[in-house]
Length: 117
Image 1: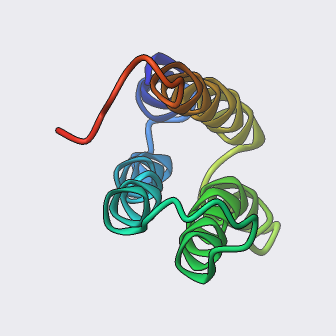
Image 2: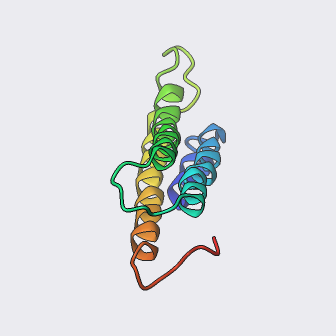
């Protein structure tokens, strides 16, 4: 989050449009959490509900990487954000999503249960 805020608030950039990726941070884990809670582990490798949840989650992840790039590549006469802000936002994306992956890997072990989530 620090990189995203730096990409928005530094005096050189001073535009808060990149902060909209926080919406994707909030929405990204929700389909997977819901699918894991309401699917049964019947031992099969293919689960349509989980595959749909992963597809929707990947849509959110790709959108969070695409939004700052699209904002920076707007018409060159007046770009919405500068490339430095885009790079800060992309670095923040990488860190946030690595943290989410670490969360799911930690709580996906057999000895821990995150059904309370």
